[in-house]
Image (tube, rainbow, N blue to C red; front, side, top):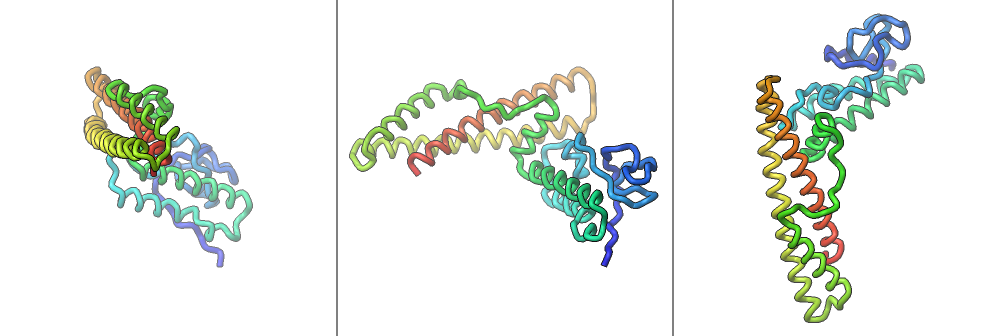
Length: 236
């Protein structure tokens, strides 16, 4: 049975201003109103817009999921089994964009990294030095880890080093959780600022402050997470 894809009233930016098939002017929806051919979603469209959400950091998971499934149904392969190769390719590409957007926004850390990438450039550069307040602690931890790796785990000294490393691991995990809690608090501040919608100098300074602090937290969290993963790999 040749099913028709569900219609959508969502205003989604298309990759073209004219239909690729009949050259009609597009109104900004998934399908051409004249020939009903599926249209490619613009690769420049951000993931928030793709899923019908404002550029906020606190997202209701149920709303995110509902919006995702509403849109993904429009590109389900079953609707295009008897369509042209061009329509099948466009539907698959649109579905892939939706899937990537959903995975990114579903995870709070990836969501924050993505927003920072949109607002202030790339954020995923991993720092090459520890956070300032953990500098000495990390250096000491590295010395302890090197000694543990070089020695015998079953010896008395090995057991003492292991206990110390396990304690440090727990301490770092708590620090990581604290950073994540602070990040969630900043989510609320960012959303409040976005909801106000003001563009005055004070709002711009507040925006820059929040972006800078979120970048610092994400960088520190990444560094600590890598240290914890290294510890887990070495001591279990």
